[in-house]
Length: 117
Image (cartoon, rainbow, N blue to C red):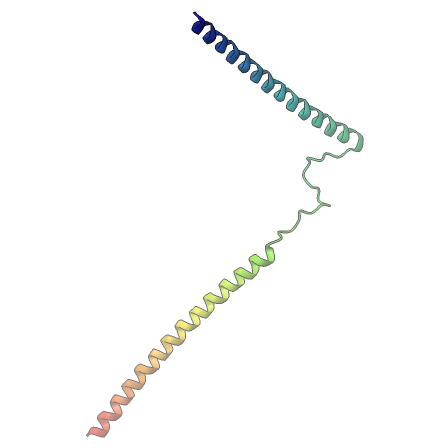
């Protein structure tokens, strides 16, 4: 019988703990909601008294801040463009050199043929 009583007591304790935890969560939620309501009321008062809304988008007078990385992005874009042109020029130079070598080989063969006769 004592085993049964101890089991019942443990279950009652567990139920009471769960009830306390639920009450804490409800109180915490109510406190958060009250805080949000006070914040909204403060914003409404500020808007009513001062005529400005802190959540409103910036007006034309307040220009949005420029991108702090704009210079870096532009420099990187310029660097990529420069590298592309350098690669293209290198390809053109290599093709031109190859053509010159072929022309020289043809001319050299013609001279050898002429001298060999």
